[in-house]
Length: 214
Image (cartoon, rainbow, N blue to C red; front, side, top):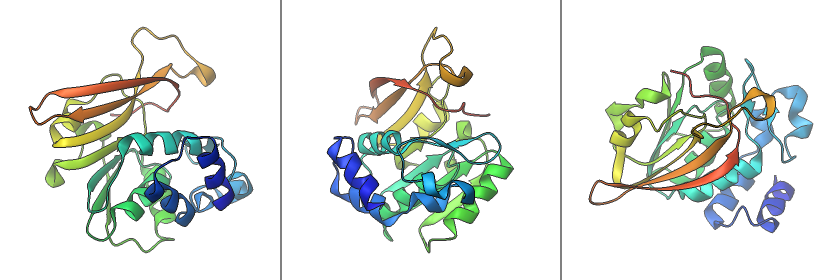
């Protein structure tokens, strides 16, 4: 992972020292099917199970840079899939923090759960369920990461975001045509919940994710 991490730093997409450390500690090869381990260090999306994918490292780095997770944060990871992002977030949050992972598809849930068992994180809890509903029992969250594209920003996730918190998610562009592999064109949206309760949004176009399933 050190070579891949160095490439991401050289390209300018990975800047945060805490993220760099997490990328070096959490091996992406542990979160892909065994037959694809040799390709885990390439900057490309890879198939996992049930037609799902693990996002390319540069996209994950971009999203986590925008999320800006901190030690002791309470974090919700929606659509955790392979659980690579869950492990990265757990590494940063540390023992004083907590990461709650949601995955709606049973086969994908099992795949991610088994991957995560390769690491001894004591600060992670997983649940099978719809990302649109969030996990209200543990709200509010300092950070929310969504790794599947929503048609609109789910209201439940907005409600579960702490004041001063940040959420990063892909959203289908309004009126967009279909892009590569039949997916809709999407943007990564960064949502800040201000002290006033109002939302400030930033939009970064040009991404493709699987859809957020209800």
